[in-house]
Length: 241
Image (cartoon, rainbow, N blue to C red; front, top):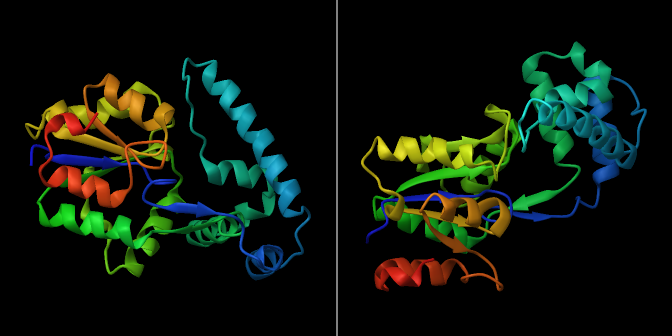
């Protein structure tokens, strides 16, 4: 195998993202009751509109600082919309935010994705992440991995880019440059690095601009997880972009 490091996107790649759960409105009400002892002042839809407006304002400020793809600090956004959140401890706040996002979507890892991670681990490939994410993403991913008896220990911490930790997001080339520099320190070249993602704009094109090889998941891309494993087992390098 001539691939030594595989970097994964999270949402739409390692995790399938689905609609809100059927009991989302009841979860929303319980969330405010359990943590803040109040009824929610906003519906889930109104909350989404309000947080989108705050996010857009923060983005405008950051773009004025020459950050073309800014990332917000989600706790700050939500606290501006729900000021009562400031009464909670950091641990309680983080639990509130995790449960809040669970009212907006569902996530799961497929058995094929898990099988690919397990196989790559057996091949002694270094695994990393390049994700537009918030802190709750790590817990979502950890819980999805645990379903398949896997853990976050699969991923090399130094080869993980989480946008919320940096204040900017993919497709900013700096996200890929950070990872490229850390791989170079391990004597891993661009052509020994594979980016696996579902979006050409956020994942594939910026990775290719850094000389990485790429795999686009999906029917409109290179193929599914099984085909990726088959390709990495022995097909010639040109089989990867």
